[in-house]
Image (cartoon, rainbow, N blue to C red; front, side, top):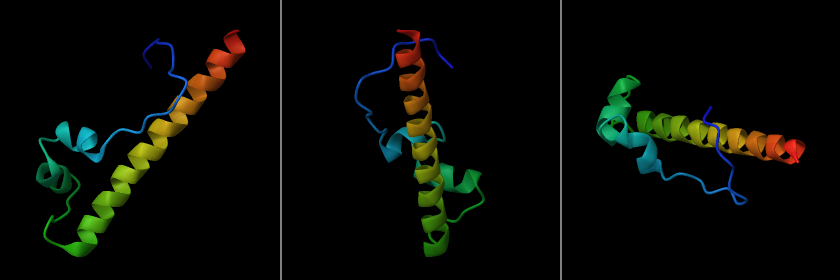
Length: 71
């Protein structure tokens, strides 16, 4: 984890932030074995991104706690 001072307000990343590293939505979906034209797969893809967002928020909260403990 990078050593940086956490911000005071959590700013969630956009969905596109997560898709960019895959080269876009379609490649993101394909990399997880999902079909972008299948509604059930699209919902699963959205849930994967929501999981990434929850993890990012958890890591931000942990950084906040650690920063508070360092004071």
